[in-house]
Image 1 (tube, rainbow, N blue to C red):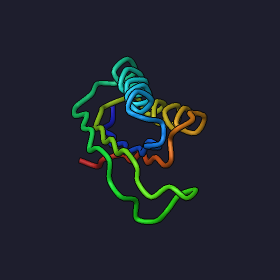
Image 2 (tube, rainbow, N blue to C red):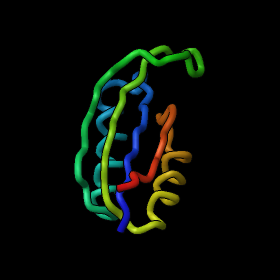
Image 3 (cartoon, rainbow, N blue to C red):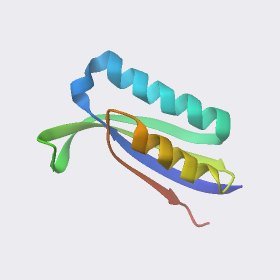
Image 4 (cartoon, rainbow, N blue to C red):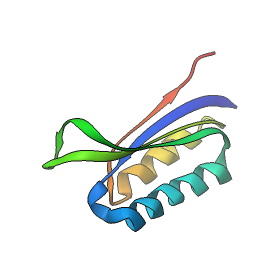
Length: 94
């Protein structure tokens, strides 16, 4: 088991219910496939640069331990989920 950190940005134009639905989806996915160390919702923040004419995003950061195959699956699901503006999954070296 390795330690990972993932940050993803949700499109704020989904509305409060839509944002919570996307966040809940990934929270449950990570909880079922990995061991969650920390799950922090940073909230709505300004993006460093506009993405598709969107200036703000809802940031979520999570740390977890998982098997080496899980981050690739998580990235695949990020890519096919509507409402995800950007994401990043990195392995934390200890």
